[in-house]
Length: 429
Image (cartoon, rainbow, N blue to C red):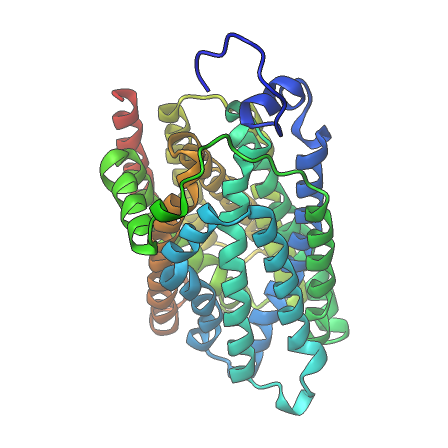
């Protein structure tokens, strides 16, 4: 795409074309394709927020065990760990639009099966675990496919902004979803609340059918030269580890970050019940405070989308310190309102990492390799998540929730140190 001096024949807009034609001249939410993606994700993320608390609350209410509650979080991390690299290859090979729509439809069917099609007497924790695992497999495909598709309709200078806006839908889901879920659980029960998410996935799929995904300009290899699955995996691994060492360092930082934050989100209902004695409605509102913090940071990232990598990593460093300090303060209060304030601060700190990390991957990796780089990144991060959930589930059960929260805070402070190192490395790159 360099050295363009003459007119080009018409083709579907590439990233650069999209920036020159429309995206660069208008806010992302006002562009047709990104606006459709954002709208569909907003609806489905609110549904996710509704169902997440209902799932965790149901298991904890039935078992009374933090360890068994944490199994839900573990099941959601297994597919990215085991299948992440393979999923990455297919994200690079297959049309992303098809992958996204298929994943949404499958998730709608699976989340609908949980409360709607299984008789109440057969609705055991084991059945729930099985359906959550299948749902997690479909989600493991959707996430990398959506992230890898961003360069298809967003210019390079706005990658971080696009990721932040999509994270904003997650934040809104956390703000409204748990509060609605808490009210629904109190009024109807957790099983009925889970039905709502099926419809939201179908709405997301309908929005995606209208999106125009640009095809990158690339030469198509002949059938005889098509690489094997193993060759694709090796190529992606070599690029992410050897060719671009900054991507390896970024993955290491994500490992630390996810080790702590996944434990926090998986065990949050346990912390709230044991430390503050809250019921489902109050826990929902407290979780919503976390979403408010995430949303505020997502909005703030719109103004740093064109910062240098070193500056964005410094922002991650400061945000991690902020979250760690707020978690330490959370262990010292019994006031639910003050706890809500601290959870909002935690959300502000947590909101910086993912949009920035994804934006760096989208900038450094070629478009035909983003899926495999994300597969490597996701495998490392989710492996850390399963370790963090297990470790802090055990610590919380044996040592108490205060010790568990302080341990998570320590992990976030270590993450800040690692981010400082990458900032320095990027300054010299």
